[in-house]
Amino acid sequence: MDVLLIPPVAFVVYVGLVWVLVRIGRRLAGPGQASALKSSIYSSGESNPAGKAAPGYRPFFLIALFFAILHLGVLVLGSGGLTPITGAYLVGIVLALIALILG
Figure 1 (spheres, rainbow, N blue to C red):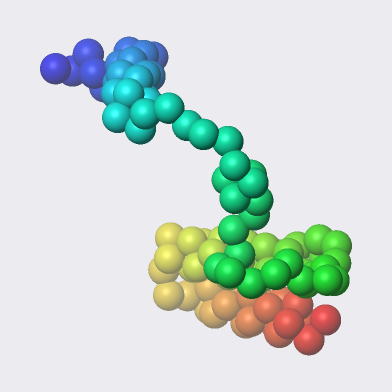
Figure 2: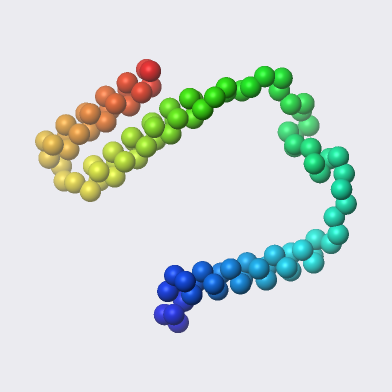
């Protein structure tokens, strides 16, 4: 059973398993029929908005940077002991997050 723990062997086994499941799923689904509803975007019965919700990637990058600082900071703090250096590091993380939030 240890042979399944070797990554290339596990990859091949899982690819085979997925292939079998896809083949079974296609047979269970039956033939498809093209329609305008299938090719349209589902938006819970509402019409599409006229303008962009958030133009550009800036809001995404701000949120991504916020969580990167937060999660990496917690990982570093969690791997160290309770020392004055980790306290200073925690203050630095808090200041960085406040500066990021205030823009």
